[in-house]
Length: 189
Picture 1 (cartoon, rainbow, N blue to C red):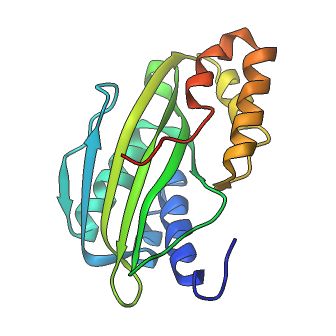
Picture 2 (tube, one colour; picture 1 turned 180 degrees about the vertical axis):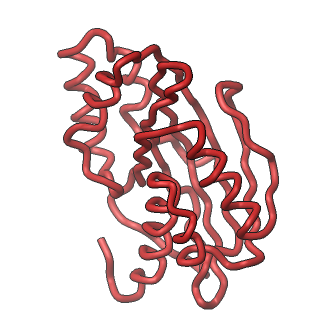
């Protein structure tokens, strides 16, 4: 997945996933510039975020501290076969998230598209998250989350692997039929 020219970008994306999924705020400077800007667009009312956040401290509060206080056992996947960087930007990188909301006894499954812009170091200077869909499904004991996360390559998930795994789950586990809607990456929007 990583050529020498892609290595710094891959490291930044992996630092972000580690920070967010494992509630490790200390990793954010490994990915983001101090004056970075985050924008979020939502095509669902199942989750809420501020539309715009500026500065690494505010972004860390939004995506790590506040997020980590609500959601656990989070795994965010970059759904792609390869990474393409053009002029310091990664445009339309599909993602999938599988996580638990303990207070609601619920599984959350979401997907969308990330857009990344890097400065010359390269650190993330602008980050846009589009959330296309977020489903909330009762999962009192976390068994559905376990079934969904099991066997998926993390954090880099080839689309064919996602499709094959979720198609298999839909066939074998009726309670997971809803994941058919997440079996393919979101198209660029």
